[in-house]
Amino acid sequence: MSEKEVILTAAGLQKLEEELEQLKTVKRREVAQRIKEAISYGDLSENSEYEEAKNEQAFIEGRIITLEKMLRNARVISGDELDTGIVNVGSTVKVRDLEFDEIMEFKIVGSAESDPTQNKISNESPVGLALLGKSKGSIVDVNVPAGVVRYEILDIKVD
Image (cartoon, rainbow, N blue to C red; front, side, top):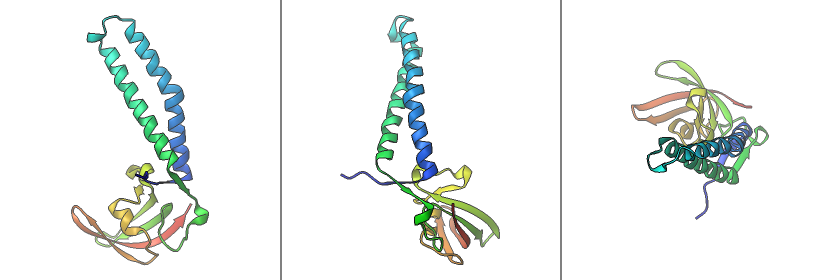
């Protein structure tokens, strides 16, 4: 079974690489030290510090495996290869909510780097999927749990 391609911007790739490096060089060492310290307390059967450290170690190792897999399957999209006439992964899209006359801006990114608090939405999200491939001036219907939201695409930029 082939692994799923992970679409990233250059900034997203750098962020994942930095997280992986931090986990491998700093966090692993910190947890190993905590485990060593907890072992020195004696009886491991009732040693909560040891249990917590082992659980954190398992989480860190799992995250390292996940990040390595994501980076192995990464495809970095650059602004050079994007058509500014249509919405792509890597595009920043300014839209108007036609019901509430609100203007919003979204950056369409791969799911690995989505962060709604930063207005970075996944290309796999309902809004991201609806916007992909559309051009400036298009009216887009987005199916959301509350019903249908209509957006007009006002502008498309590529960083």
